[in-house]
Image (tube, rainbow, N blue to C red):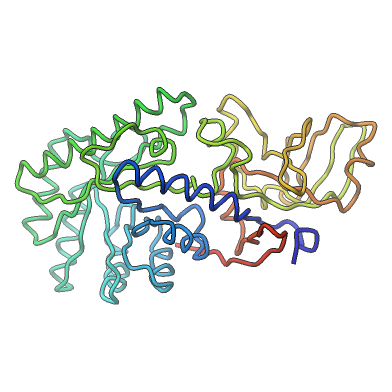
Length: 374
């Protein structure tokens, strides 16, 4: 099939753009001398992940046990589950490990560590556990110099659990748009995570892996001394938030939503399309950035951004595209015309779909399934 033949709305992956993004990141990680473990929560798609591994990625990062199970079934066994574990999920995680998955789990508090120790004694098996480090105050994790870091490490070690590493994610990088500021945050991320590892080792707690990463800091880091691996996810598609951060431009964004014109409101300068918030998501991440793209950036069928057009509104199944050419609105945007919308947040938009349509250079498309659930 080609784009004109597809039903709308549909999630489109431009394979050429995706491959360019994969190659760019892998080349940079190779130059920095670190292993690259991509975060696959953005795509949740075996077709995409196969391309990442073919380019040189080693292992993957997931955000749900459903992802871990699905990718292990697809033949990938080196998996980091990078969300703090709760006791109720330990049996499910152990079942996956005992099938042969090299599953690493994370913790950042004594209660979780104690629960892991108790469960492993009951199961007569152990997990490799990494400790989550907070290097920018963005979300969860232990401060690099927190006394609790050593205490939790000892709880695990004395309970027979291997502390395999430390990991961090500089999510506050999404709030920046200056290369010097991004480089400074990348160094803060690196230094904080390395500091945590050094403190654990000094206390006699093994810590082989030092894992850092966000798409902006991975692309901005000047060096990664002491780091063993990097994780990044949205780079594979990019999106308008990343364009505002300054790590890509619109022509790098590999994910778009195919939509059809279904109506007009000429007096308001509106074109109505069949991609509402159910197709685009409600994510309005660009509203707090230097350029607000509304619900997405409208493009022609070939992916070229359209001047004077903005997806200003979205109901459940209706998108409102404001255009400047009111006098020619029905002529320029006839009923049934197909457009492509670049998303604010690729992770959120992708999550609306059970599959992607992968667009090849010859214009043909093929369905790539996408995992759902937790």
